[in-house]
Image 1: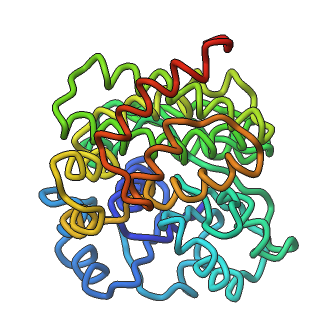
Image 2: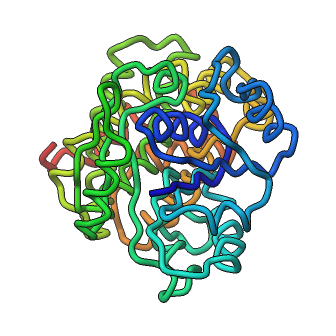
Length: 336
């Protein structure tokens, strides 16, 4: 079996290394010809993974047509904002039905769709066997060092789940199976909003008590929304829920946490994202989740207040005050 990875960012590159480590042929697509040449000639991708030497057997291409037609399985590792357009381009070159696994943790602005829904909407049915997501508590910076990492493959298709385990699992990368793709996608997307909040807490110097409370209450908000959208509650106690939430809210590798940290230290949103020079999925997801909460009448005070900080210029002091007083007032008659 041959695998094509679409997207040469940190996660796409790290997964490509896993695939090659496991003895499979892998073609990594990069739209940036400089990165493609660097991977093929120097076996590095310094823009995303500074000091890592990649396997010599990993080959990159800047031809999307070549990548799409090469792989029996396509792994799509692009930001959520690019998913629809990339899938439109992929669809042009598909000449037979294939499995697609994506690793994007976010929701589409305007449509509020999960990424698997975007893929199903864009890719012709005759060309799509099934779609899944690989998600969990993981940073490319650690996976590429072959540090122990555990994630979930989520798909309603049993064969795709088994195939993903076969291709990706090895002594340092373990893959669990979860058929609740809604829950895993919602958990992976919404945890980024909570991670922004945790970064803000640390930027303000508010301590571990506050951060632990935000993570805990954040999980409850994510679970509320997930259940409303058809997810299973148990999913949020697993890798795609609490696991992904904890690592994203506490790790310096997390760009969402780092963005929040900069905001907490007094930088504007634009200054923070510019400093990071990477996609911060939580910023866009906060907008989508704000809309979803209104449409579905789901109580999400943390998400709502972070949205107001990002998009309505609410002060951080007012945000903290609202959460400390508002939650207590509005939830007096609620179970935790």
